[in-house]
Length: 486
Image 1 (cartoon, rainbow, N blue to C red):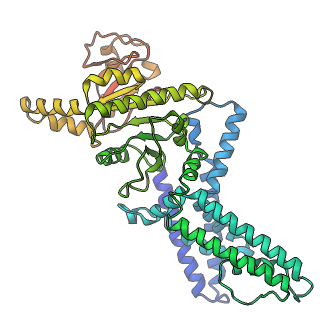
Image 2 (cartoon, rainbow, N blue to C red; image 1 turned 60 degrees about the horizontal axis):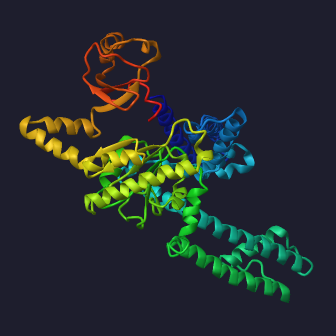
Image 3 (cartoon, helix red, strand yellow; image 1 turned 60 degrees about the vertical axis):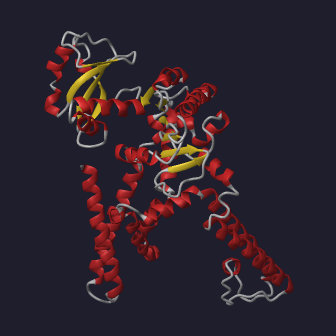
């Protein structure tokens, strides 16, 4: 609630700030209102500066939810995550906008207009800015390569021209030479500065050719003609990224969009990134907020592409387009390969707070134990669940509708939670229910899950509660701390 109030206030101030920007352009500088407008603008910029500092300062590193660090390592992680967050494009735009507090940088106030790109409610179903941002993020290494090439050509060409023509070109400065190099590379050619010596013209010729190559490179990147040819760079980009605590989904078919919809309802995709890992090309219909990495999850050598050691959980989805036995064989092999990969990366995972949680989808109930033996923490028999609900609905009319409402994201859902420490010493289920009174919080306890993974639905009041017992309850939202093991 506090976050919404703060964000709403900031948006109101942004609207006022933009109005002031328009008023400043319309009101002459000698008008008596101008000092008042300037004073209000400085106050707003000061508020934006404080908000930016608090935004960066209160950032919670994603790695803190996965790894334990010694004090020095924790400080390095905290500082590094804040620096990476501060240099993101939108954060840099906000920083440059508040630098307009300095009189010499007054023109930077126009950058506050770009904060309107944050508006998500205007594009609830398809945000073109989000799509563009995801496209840039997916090819950031290629854009970095092209920009580095252009910057290198500009500096090299500008400095060379300045050294060659400093004595022959009256009034030529290094800044002028760099400007000429940039104009030449981009093929704009204003003509305000031209080489006058033969060697200078040769430098200009090389820059013209280099500019053609650079523009072709940019066109190839933007047109996606270089994406497939440089796919290895894109995969390496994710390996070198700082993604942590993300969800990896192995396998994709024509029905996986239902899983994507469910994940979108369950998770905040801005906080928890979802990465799809499959050997096909990215589907055109896949929403841009889901990342895609090309590879084979059954090959241990390719699992590093999705930073599996830094992930929070893995979903191994069954291939519904293949026969059940074949689909389950691929699922079991994928789970086994993931566990083997984690064992091989022991040094990378030994500091994890909780082990990687693997959920596997099995189509044939005979393969459930095989999936558990391969290393799955949880196995979902999707076809058996559907068949059981269909059969139960014949005998008890409406039961399937009730179960669907519970299983699907809606008003209520099933959660697992830890017993609060102040009630941890209570011995029986009945005593615990009398002491906790969860019904006052809108939760209904329907069972317990023991440390060995077995469950007891609607246990007797005399049932004993050994250590590490978890409560299974029905509620609109979680009211108990989630289990440490996921």
